[in-house]
Length: 156
Image (cartoon, rainbow, N blue to C red; front, top):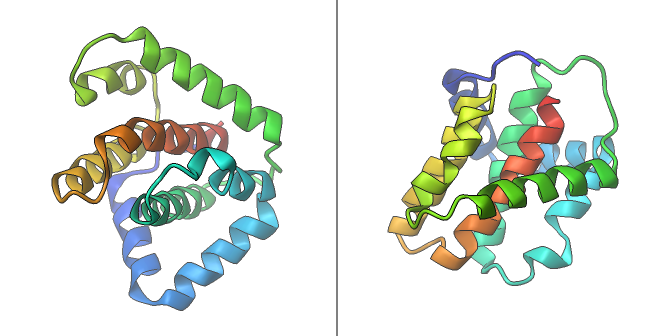
């Protein structure tokens, strides 16, 4: 997969935010083309999130999905096992890093990714939204892992 740069991410954010019909169209496309990803985003694991956190998760996931589709080589159907395997690996990585700072705990992910701008988009959104009390410190780590997992399976 080609590198997803900040420009493309910002264009995708602007497109999805410009009109609610763009968001709805992207959501229907995700449901149709990648039902395992939508199921993952709506799973029981998200029940502890606030409504705002759920909305941010879905929006960020659609930004990632739409951004990666620009360079997608064919339509590879992602399976539930692939998502769960990637998530497990991501949890192992974050739990192995015992530093206290959230940003420092993300360093291993940045060191091992080819999609640094997508990870920065996720990180920045979580930090900025937390500063505005829209994302809880409890939900931040789980949201990061879910969005990192989606990035992994879409850019594989």
